[in-house]
Length: 282
Image (tube, rainbow, N blue to C red):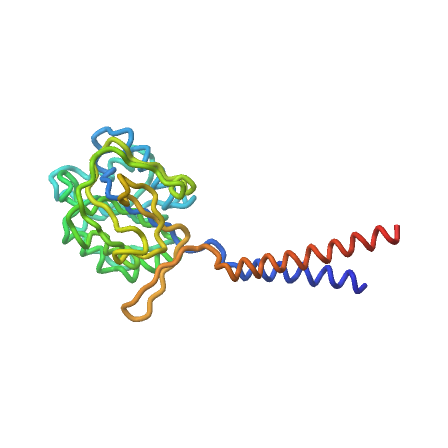
């Protein structure tokens, strides 16, 4: 009876330790200096392949539509919307130049992710700085959407220093003028299912995560000659105290892993003791 109790206690502790490890929660973010929305619209297969992987990543298995922010400010049609139609991804279009954005739009029960088109400074891209500012004014609602599991996909910010201000704990636009080739997918990017976009011009870099004001919670998906071209967060959450916000990824802390392994160790020990007892009485 005592042996059986030890076994059950070990199992219960292991389960308790497992439950103490943070579950994969929160949303996924992917940000890039590429304007895949424009280049896919004009027939780039590299842009289409990359965009498919990025949409899959931020939607994280959800089949709900995408909340798309796109505009005709460049004089072109809604390129990003056309891309999503081609890919068979349902979406609701919001043009910040003609539609008032409200907090209620960021509803995780209706949308799998939000997608923000590239900045007009790319040349042929869509969103103006004023459009991005209108989206960014709802950062609190976007944070709640993200924490509840909603994804965020942001295309090139180009010359706009606040081009990613809509992101929880705003990502830093490093600027620069990257070339159109030499992009290398990182091991982390590969593991996340993300694909490097080679052959198309791109419009801005990012600082290395943990430097230049960019949170260390970001991982690098793609580099170019050692510079950071695309970044992501997987299963992240955002928490704020006043104006100060911190983003974290959904990776268990070392202490949580230690507790879990300790629980498994106790469970394994109890099982081994039971096995030895069975042999001695066999």
